[in-house]
Amino acid sequence: MEWFLKVVKGHYADFNGRARRKEFWMFYLIYMIGYFALYIVGIILAMISTTLGSIVFGIIGLASLALVVPTIAVGVRRMHDVGKSGWFILIPVYNLILWITEGEKGDNQYGPDPKA
Image (cartoon, rainbow, N blue to C red):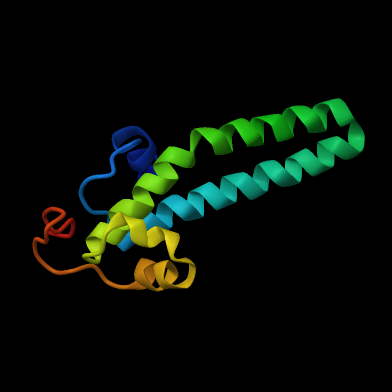
């Protein structure tokens, strides 16, 4: 949870610097667990009452909208960690390869090594 809060609170719209694999993947893990948990609750409540289901799905929509910027920011910082421009997140398969690639050791043009 601390990795999720680090991205949301500490680096909400920070597109500069580098993000370790652990920071990136822990953010996505917490994000997906929360999303699917709320989605399941929404489905269950929608079976009971359409109003309650609509409220939960509205909350999911607002939360997803609020997390668009930090999600893109952590992706860009992850690209920086492997020495690539942030624009590489737009290349569908290649960005997945870069997300699992170990970051460059030492400083690069995007900042100091986050593991150091």
